[in-house]
Image (cartoon, rainbow, N blue to C red):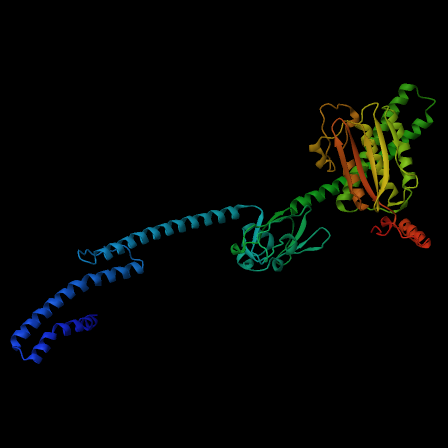
Amino acid sequence: MRNNFLIKIAPVILVINLPIIIGLLLKLNLLIVLALSLTLSFLAIFFIYRLFTPLKKIALRAYQIAVGNTNQVAPNTEDETQLLTKSLDLISKSQTQTYAKIAYERDILASDKNKLATIISSIPEAVIVLDLHKQVILANPAAEKITGFKQSEMYKRQIDELIKLLDKENIPISADEYCPVNLEKPGGQSNYASLEPITLGGKGYTKAKVKLSANTISSDIKSDLGCILLFHEVSQETSLQSMQVDFVSMASHELRTPLTSIIGYLNVLIDEGKDKFDTEQKDFLYRVLAGAKQLSNLVSNLLNVSKVERGAISINTQPLEYYKLLSQVVDENRLQASQKNISLGLVDTDPSIPQVQADTVRITEVLNNLISNAVNYTAKGGSISVSAKVQNQDVITSISDTGKGIPAEAIPHLFTKFFRVSSTEDTSSNSKGTGLGLYLSKSIIELHHGKIWVQSKVSQGTTFYFTLPISQIQTIEAHNSLDSLHLAPPKTLTNLHS
């Protein structure tokens, strides 16, 4: 550094000694010229030293600031470099404040990260976070347990490589279905929820029954967040439900045999003793018989529910003369309606309505159930009308009553098991039920690939609707007959119901 200093001041010394050179050239007194030259040289060196010393300190101070050392005291100068020194001092203070702010924010981020990790770890459900490429970037301990993989094994691996999801029919569910991330247009948001338990296959032979809730994250592509998967394990619940269904099925089978015997013997007793019993005794026997039949219907409903939940209920569909069936069911229920002075009739239905593809026994159960409900919830003197009409490739059946109606808040739960519409105004025994009839009706209609729904207003009445497919055989025959007449078939006959 000293050599560099000498090199820098050499030109200055040369300029200062210029009088000597000029004096020699002009042959002046050598001693005078030499003394003058030395004096000027010392003065120049003194001033150069005074100038370079604070500059050296300032350069060292700037270097310390550049490497992050802002704790050194700024050099105290009282010359022309004082402004530069103050500027460096301000820069140092500003940099110190910036470092302090960054450190504070870093501590806050670390604290928030720890809190988030603690919260996710404490969630009992399995949580898995995917990026935009459907790769795992975060998983909690519950996810490790349910999948069999540790988080380090899952990190940055495709979710489809780690777990396999199967619906209740063992059809695979891909990540594109529950996590539809669009890399070209990120930011869209969608939700996915499995209404029925699905099977999750993890590491090895690990399997679990779960309910999946997936939410895509509405953010831009810079965040690299795809969606959050939440798995709620229901293996134990499913096992308990299976045990419950098996118990109900077994109990129903055990109760059906003695009830059948009781009803049979009561019928024989009533028939053979009709001339021996007085009016009061016959009334008792009829009440016992009615109670036994009611209990038998309950057992049958419980047995059917257990079959539905096990997927064991079956239907035998065939072309069915629907108008004939409707007329028969209405006639069979007319006696029950007349006991409450309720008019029941088949209205606005064409006798030539097409055949439907249905199971006669099961559809009869649905009709009896809906008409019986209408009778039970309609006051004396009311009316019930049954009708059917064709719409596209279906026949829509409606059962309307002038009863008390159903509250709007109860309609979404109407077709669930054991649900009954509560009413503080209705205290009649006829309104009591098990809450299984509509659930079974919905299950039967869906087995026929139909739909069932309800429209109701309180104090104005209720209408139940359900659809059944038109018989495929009849549709084909109608199509062929039109072809034989060289007529274009109507649109309702071109698309056969599957």
